[in-house]
Length: 192
Image (cartoon, rainbow, N blue to C red; front, side, top):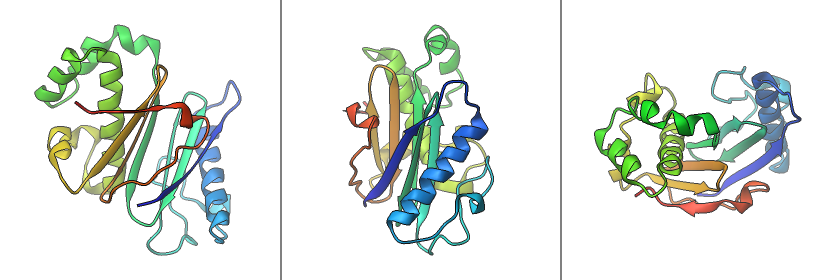
């Protein structure tokens, strides 16, 4: 399934509201590329999944942002996306953060990985992307059974990483994707 993506950077000193606004601006731009007029101000409010009254039926939108980077996507079936900047403070708190993960097998995979911090971000972004794709099916992020999701044959999960970033996409169809700049420098990663 092709997912059309756009990414943009925010100026230093931005807040979450600015990131959300830029995400909706990017979505409006993606809609314009497809010939649809979906004005930025009519997207659902911040804190809700992106939806627009003029978005044609059978079209789905997604937004993620971290640090100064925002990414937005548009596709013809439900998908999930998550972007995470690797924050140095999380490295020192990794053992504590692992305790929040509900699956013992996932915690063990992360602990045994060559680079546990990178592994944590691979699994974290995958979990968030699955959560976003599912919409309201899960009450909260940790209700996602990541171990079970990884075993599903009808769920496509792709993760890309660099030393500073992790990005995940999920879909119920095989993913056909070209990452936009600056994410085009990320390398495909494996959820081992």
